Amino acid sequence: MAIWTSTPNLEHLAKASENTAVSYMGIEYLEIGDDYVKGRMPVDERTVQPFGILHGGASVLLAETLGSMAANCCLKNPETVAVGLDINANHIRPVTKGWVYGTARPVHIGSATQVWEILLENEEGKTTCISRLTMAVTKRPG
Picture 1 (cartoon, helix red, strand yellow):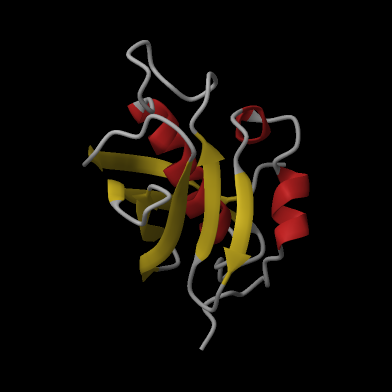
Picture 2: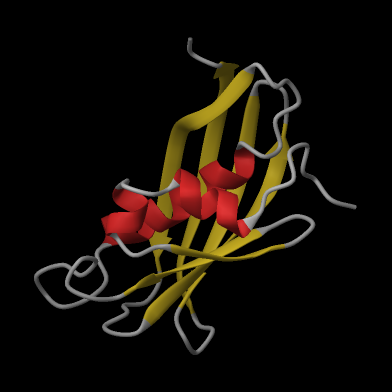
């Protein structure tokens, strides 16, 4: 059974991300399932740190992007918005080239908070980062 209260689609997610850090970093939305959002980010000059490996902050940006976009499609009240409250990340293995893929799945979807787990993997399917994102659900501004 799908978790979405507002059915997400890839075109909508891409449109909402135009001219943001998401598009600048080359993040692409790939797939939406009944309880997940998948995307990817290139490992290139935009996303590596000075030692030539994927920057931990770039991994966190991908994780928060996927979790945040998914969270906002699970809101129980259309007058609310989900915003990042806390994120952590455990960096498991380095990535030096290609793409890193992320999958966001919910741990908890409540009316005041949501918790999402985001698993990042390299092109071989090996875990590169595990992140947990807590979202605060608050009144939509304006």
